[in-house]
Length: 253
Image (cartoon, rainbow, N blue to C red; front, side, top):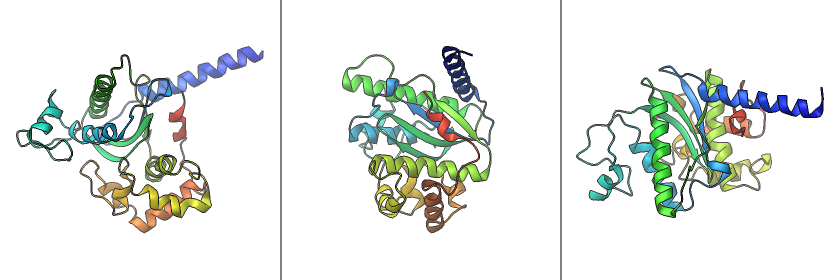
């Protein structure tokens, strides 16, 4: 087989993997690791206001009730800097349970639980559309903000659920807050102390620093207390513990 043929076959296999990840079905009760990346690797947030808007979307768009003027409704009651719902909205009925999240400059990770039929697909569609609309209007841009459909993989067991939570909210938070030392074992304690205060990640909720209404932490919170969870995360970061599935494959282009 020629080198060109080998490269061609490798590219076909890679595209098939991505296709499978995008088409993977979810049933109610499924836990799903989701990643959505900016088009051509470009940033999807540029400043703190963009990041705060992401948190608002993560919370307020996770609801069977949806208003096209949802942000205006917040402004009308001076709630745009809070995670409180306008008084005229009905009681929240979530589409998904958000267990973990982490926002980076050019992509974001979520760990979701499907709690109603088609909940993840509807939530991700709303989130993508709302983020693109905000970005394009604010920065006078055109075209797609994101690189195609979101990518996702079902988490198959409790061990992988723990592993993916650490992968999302520790590994990625380290890369945001401490990029030069994110993978250095000797820097774990220092990096962890910094990362738990990163406001655009759910790690603080699992360490007692924060109590955000965005996430439903009872599932993971019941697995590890803060001290034990930190110890487990260290094992993941330094490579002593690995998941049984290759969740880093979601990073494939």
